[in-house]
Image (cartoon, rainbow, N blue to C red; front, top):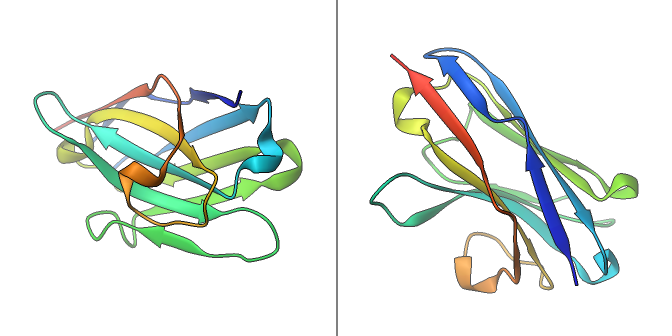
Length: 124
C-alpha cells in the first residue's frame, strides 16, 4: 500500500515562500502521477498542481497558482515538491499530497492515495 508523508508547512507572511515535500513509500511503481490539493476550513478540497512521473515530464496547475507555485519531483526518491512563492492569505489551507495510478491532471476522483496533510497559514 502506498503511503504519502508531507512536510514543510508552516506560518508565513504574505509575499513569503514555502516549500512542501511529499515522500511516497510502498508500491510506488504503480504511481504515475503525484500532485497537491488543498482544503480550507468549510471548503471543498481543490486541485493545486500535479506532475507525471517517469520519462514524460508534464505538469498541471490551478489557475489560481500559476506563476507562483512550481511542482517538481525526484523520481529516484519518490518525492514531489511544491515551491510556493508570493503566498497570499487565500492560500491558507491544509495541503494534501496525492498519488494516482493513472496519468492524470486535476480530477480529485482519479487519485487513489492521500497524505494526512500539512498546514499552511499565510498572515496578512
